[in-house]
Image 1 (cartoon, rainbow, N blue to C red):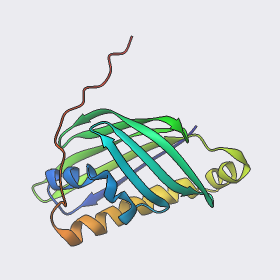
Image 2 (cartoon, helix red, strand yellow):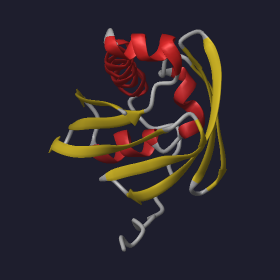
Image 3 (cartoon, helix red, strand yellow):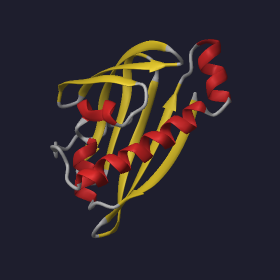
Length: 154
């Protein structure tokens, strides 16, 4: 499993950054290689992305979500990945967005790309494009402020 952690400060209030992040179907606007994200219900997403020059699809489940704090997920089929994005209030108009992504590269091309830092650069670039996207808008395009409790660990 490859693991990446990146942070960026965005010049919008924490609720604006969080609300925009919950608009998963808009991810292709700022995430490189993401072709589509379809939200099938409050906690399930279907992804289509170009990974290493090949189309990959996977389903993911939101495993924990708390407004203005965090969104965590796990892939349930297809490309193996999991992660969490957290939102930290710096001041009334600044939010630190931290994304931790764990992905299991498949095959020679993905493993080589991971070894060469492609995943790290893609995540960093995605956060920079998110910053540009939300700061240029100044407001979120929508919001989902529901709570999803983390599963009980046994």
